[in-house]
Length: 247
Image 1 (tube, rainbow, N blue to C red):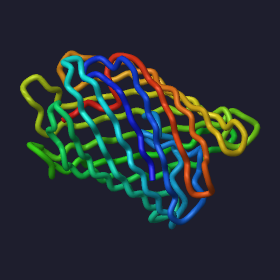
Image 2 (cartoon, rainbow, N blue to C red; image 1 turned 60 degrees about the horizontal axis):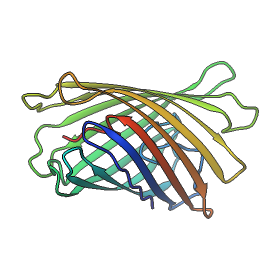
Image 3 (cartoon, helix red, strand yellow; image 1 turned 90 degrees about the vertical axis):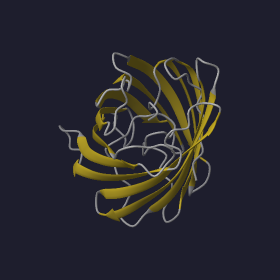
């Protein structure tokens, strides 16, 4: 089970605080395996093991420049259904005084590791996510493609790792002032501090859904293994933009 909390603004992300908890149902929790929102946005290129199942609960609190509050709660189920492949199903729920368009949307994501890391080349993975418009005033089936790379520079496994993500989203039903396509570039770093703790950070440069708007966000995170099946994550961030622009 994972829980997280994030403080942002819709156009200006002034600060962020994230707390997350992950429960592995069938295997040991992996403190070094990076997932989007746990607690920062960068993804690594390593899937969960075949047959493994995990529950996550991602929560976020956004304080918008207008003064409105938005509470985001996203329970997620992950399953390693095949070797080097995983699927994730997420329910996107919203509450608060801000616009709640998209409350109740379902998100289905497939991940496939394309190349395992070698001495010279990084690991590569591809992600395909579909945002199904089952929620409040949602329109169109949004599609997101993410390519991820991970290279270990340290002498020990999972130490001093560099990560890069390129993300493209098709906005299937853009509003008058929205882009039909949104692109993002993320670079990140992570390393283990002992066997049970990992520190990580990333830099995000993104196009926002609003035409002409660009965002830059810096995030830092800490992950700590509480037990053999449970990992706790804490994160902070600052900058213009946010981890994901609402529909």
